[in-house]
Length: 266
Ligand SMILES: NC(=O)c1ccc[n+]([C@@H]2O[C@H](COP(=O)([O-])OP(=O)(O)OC[C@H]3O[C@@H](n4cnc5c(N)ncnc54)[C@H](O)[C@@H]3O)[C@@H](O)[C@H]2O)c1
Figure (cartoon, rainbow, N blue to C red):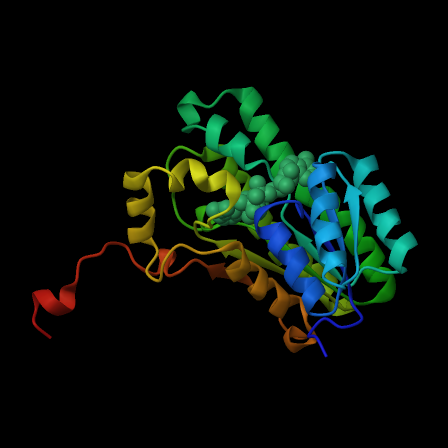
C-alpha cells in the first residue's frame, strides 16, 4: 500500500517542475491528486498522464493571487473528493523572478508588488482557505515550497528573497497556531532544481558549472523535492510541524570550498 493511500492531495503549480513531480509521485503513493495551476492546459496534461498510469487525478485552474479563484479551487477539491488532506504549494512564475527581479536599488516598485503578490499573498490565500477546511476536520498537512534564498543572502533577487522569507516566517506562525488542532505546516527550502524554466541557466555551460560547484551532491531534480514532500505529507511525519527544511544538495552547509583538511594535512 502506498504511503499516501486514501489521502487527497492538492498541488498548486502542479503543471510544471516541482509541483508536477509532486502530483505524479503523490499519485503513485496512493493519493487522489488535484493538479491546480494557472496553466490549465499544462494541468490537464499532468492529470491525464497520471490517470493513464491508472491513478486518480483531476485538473483545476487557479490563480493563487485571486481570493475568489483560490476559494473555487478549494470548493472544487471538496466537491470532487470530499476533503483535502495535503496541500503542496508551489505556484510561482519562475520567469517573472528570473527576468524581472533585481537588487533593491534597481528594483522597480511594480516588480516588487508583482512578486510579493504572487509569492507571499498567493501563499497567504492558498494556505488560508485550505487551512480553514483542514481545521474543521482537525487534520491535514500543509507543505509550502520556500527556497534557500530565504535563508542565506543571494544578490539580485530582493523581491523574491523577501517574499519567500515571509513564507518561512508564516510557516512557523501558522504551525504554532494550527498544529494544536491537528494541522501540520512545514516548508521545504530547495537549492537549485533542474526544472524546465531553469534551463536558462542549465543551457549555459559556465553557469551550469558554477551551480554544480555550489551543490555538493549534484543539481537536484524535481523528484528530489517531491519525495521529501511525500514524507512530510505522510503519517510517518505525524509529529513533524513548524519545520523549515533545506533540500539543497549541501548548498547551505558550506561558506566556501576551501579544503582546510588538506591545507593542514589532517
Ligand atoms: N526550480 C528551482 O530551482 C527552485 C529553487 C528553490 C525554490 N523553488 C520554488 O519551487 C516552487 C516550484 O518551482 P518550479 O521551479 O518547479 O516552477 P515551475 O515554473 O516549473 O512551475 C511553477 C508553476 O506555477 C504556475 N503558476 C505561476 N503563476 C501562478 C499563479 N498565479 N497561480 C497558479 N499557478 C501559477 C506556473 O504555471 C507553473 O506551472 C516555487 O515556489 C519556487 O519558488 C524552485
